[in-house]
Each structure stands twice: as structure tokens, then as C-alpha cells.
Length: 96
Image (cartoon, rainbow, N blue to C red; front, side, top):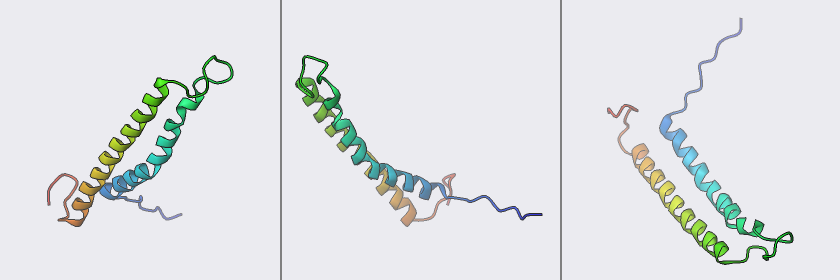
């Protein structure tokens, strides 16, 4: 019979930290795609030129601001997680 392997255990803190790091790395790509979204508005089939109007300007600055806020939130979560890892080791239920 084949030996059964023990399930791979990933600590919650390190797993969450890796996912937050992945999110922080993906954030510029997501913001770039969202930032270019006004280029889809208007165009050859409509009367408006591509990306024209105050709606597009508001959209670009709103996405820019939301990107900054998202980066701050994610980076603060990473800093708090870093203190937990470097400091005294605690269990998942909060006990030491």
C-alpha cells in the first residue's frame, strides 16, 4: 500500500502575509486597467471622442485615489502582521 502523506500545513499568518503581498503586487496592474477604462467610453460608434469629458477625468482621479487608499490599507496590514511574526509567538486563539 502507498504511504499516506500528512496534509501540508501552512501557518495562517504566513499564508495571509503572502496573499497580502500578492495583492500589493497586483494592485498596480489592476489600477492601470481601471485607469484605462475611460478609453472604452465613446469611440467610432458614438458622437463622443474616446475618453472625452469630465466623467473620464473624475473617473481617473477617483481610481487614482482609491489605489492610494488600497495601498495604504494593505501595507498597514502587512506592517501589523510583521510585528506579530517578529514579536512574541502567539497561537491562533490569542494565547501565548
